[in-house]
Image 1 (cartoon, helix red, strand yellow):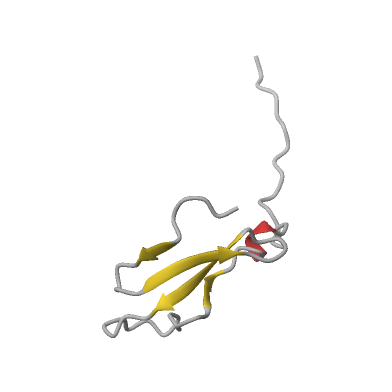
Image 2 (image 1 turned 120 degrees about the vertical axis):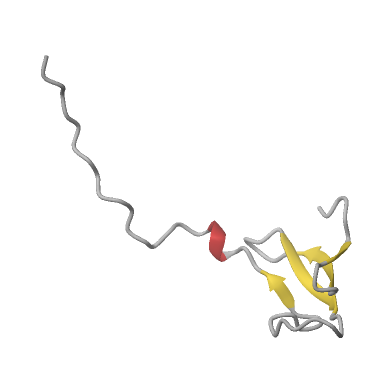
Length: 74
């Protein structure tokens, strides 16, 4: 499943790793090592950084209003 990269370093200096995801999310991105210089409170060691399960669900927002088709006079 996980072919290619296993670790990466973010611009803030934190090191992330990629793990097998859970149902509905193929990959989980986890902060493997937090940088001492990182000021982002979202980066917590050993906690998932991104979880795309919600992105795979259908949207609950209303779309733009449907426009009626029109014919040109001619």
